[in-house]
Image (cartoon, rainbow, N blue to C red):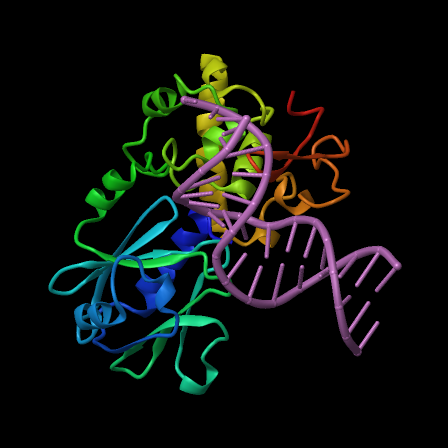
Length: 262
DNA sequence: CCTATAGCCTGACGGC
DNA sequence: TGCCGTCAGGCTATAG
């Protein structure tokens, strides 16, 4: 699931459930999702601390700890968070479980173990070290900056949007949606866009991401003229009714309308 | 620099 | 019902 909107929804979820309570216990059921840290070290740094605040960059969620340090959640394709009380109702595929002093738990649930958990000092340094591009919902992310990120690249739009070093946070589903809303063909070369198209893409990107967050990143709540509900085999364009084209681009299954996205 | 591919991991789904 | 292949909203390493 987790692209930028999903991760932003998880961030709000952590804010409304898990802050300012002492973390009495950390249980790690799958050590292989820990990045660069042992079970023991992770527990030592997190237990008896509190989650103080949250931040997000692209698909990464940062949860700052009291004292110092920051837990980084990366959700892979199937990660999610669940806050619950009854210890018997621990969700299946819980990989890490935080237990608070109010006896509630926060589970990092992830059927496919493609995500990661890390402990870092400084999110901005983390972003820099990974070479992540700007977060498209960052207040300081201007049209100029977007233009700059696209110029010089020879890749397709689909690929550029999904490239985390170019823009951070967009994945397969939302790249399709953004290109659909901007009426741009996914195979268009990113470096050859007109000023006008770049501008439209920029606004479509912000619009789609914001709208999704407003709707709790729930595909079922998205407007009818969005692609997302039709993004399946045999789907038709919600704007013109044309059969959608399905093809692999950058190794991912991509959907677009041959009429609306020329 | 770019693209395509395989691999990581595990479950859901469709065809026979 | 069971088995098998394919696919999945991410990312990385590798080859061409």
